[in-house]
Image 1 (cartoon, rainbow, N blue to C red):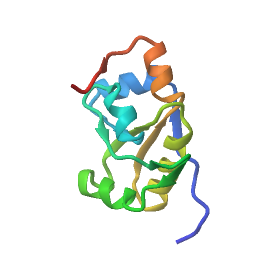
Image 2: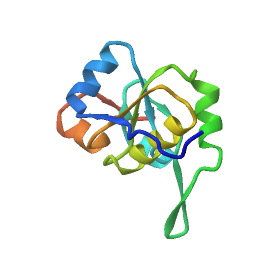
Image 3: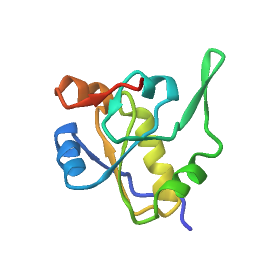
Length: 122
């Protein structure tokens, strides 16, 4: 397996919203705290990183957890708060042979700014 991975396809939230309506699944890679404060409707939360002390540490089981929820050829939109973590997560997933990965540019912040529906966890 070569270490050269193609960068993930990244789409603006307007396109992500259309893809979601067309049946793609939304993988939210933010922390559980961020997710519970509000998320894209029907999103599935698998944190890419955890808060630890003052910083963030990568979730060592990220790929395993995603693999238990999605098949390798599932069409998955990967989103985070601003677009940084989702890009890293998308690269990792592609490196592990997931084929339907699309990064959500701008993340949840852009989603909210665009006025798309969000859900709060109760």
